[in-house]
Image (cartoon, rainbow, N blue to C red; front, top):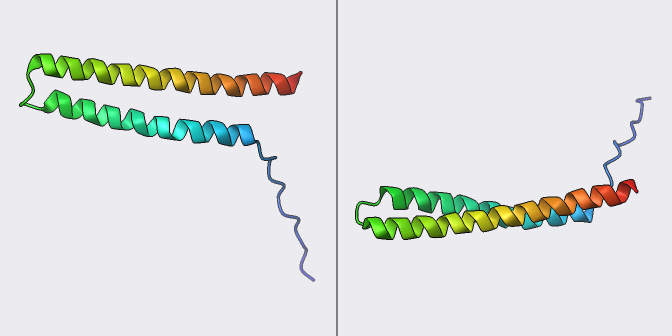
Length: 86
């Protein structure tokens, strides 16, 4: 008779981890698109310098807001870990 193996126990599902992942996924896409747009702006010969600067400043603001949101989301994870330890 062949030995039977118990299936490996999966880690408990943490809905907060899923929520953090779901919140960060679109932020990663926004950041990536902003970076691509920045590259196009830098390489575009048809833009005047003042237009290029204004667009670059707007993209920098988008990147800063994305980073702020990622920091907040990551802090939610640290709070969950701290609460679980108490």
